[in-house]
Image (cartoon, rainbow, N blue to C red; front, side, top):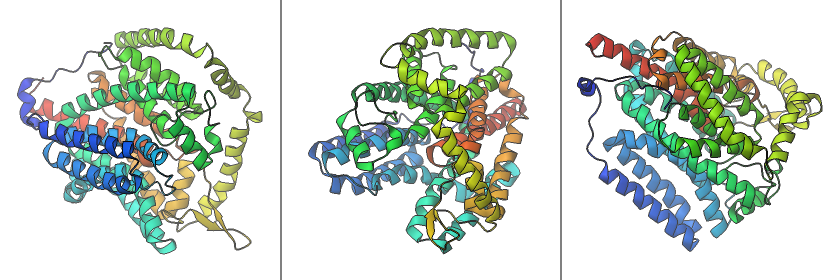
Length: 477
């Protein structure tokens, strides 16, 4: 334990929903787990995929209505594990190129749209303007998308853009439940880092057959070779980038944990983060650490530094021995020689070509429309490896001004709060949000699970502020 949690007077319980023990909630989750295991063992892919989507959504609705805090944990685990479940059923039956099963985590998260539709009209007075602006930009982009592409494609793209904002608004508007959400998120990411980190290391060392089958079927060369010690790991998730974002988030939250499992979780998590070879998230972790340090009092800063040193003692020996050292060292060397790094050169070329496309497409290409007509009148796929340019290209100037305006306003607000020194989780959440924001120039980190982390953790900072202000005004210590 390196921080002292802010004390919450027991009399503040009136501000937080009291819940019965979620026995029925756990039974519903267990039913989904048993059904998934049985279907995978039987190789019943054609039945399992649509049933999994329907059952997981039903479980999500039940938890949302009866056990909202458990729903929050279930939601995160859907993002963590569903891609692995998809690979397992593909391996046991046939490869599904549509990856239909992956719609399930979006649907479970979009249950929060019930809260958005119910609370958004009156949220302006509560500080919800950033979400109103961002949703307006996404709505505009979706309308353009429906005009320029097929409804199915537009809806699939809309899921990526809408899910993070819907989730973040839910976290913000449920600010009275902040203590429960804080405890739940800390526990979920502790176990998330431990489970996915360990699996990621195993994935690199062993290359499980279902991961090899999936890599061969998708022909994704950027993920490495389908063999032991040849993969650029993505663990239980869909790709290396979102997994690295999740691990970075969990590792920053672990500094605020007193659980004995934080040590093995950190060791597995840091090694897995290095094995993703995602340099952007290595830098984001550093930004997060510096932001966190700047938010804390001097004596707590020293405790954090000591903890970092302890973690380094645990991780460095693992990262400097074979079979890990060569691949990690080779990737680290690219920082000092970016001019000759093929990945950096490719991104630079994409960025240079994308600037003109994005900034001159005033109306926007629309959400889901991933093609553009080139100078020869031929459709070509869009590749813009930048969240900022992607926003302008997809939403156009009108939509981008609203969307980015909401994000900038949200950032401005979280820099104004004074409770960071007494609430280390709040400080860590702000550090995570800022770390994700700084990656936007070189990656679309505002979409999907990465976007949920970006928007969600900035939103929980706002929720924490509203909770602490309410505590002070109510006379609680």
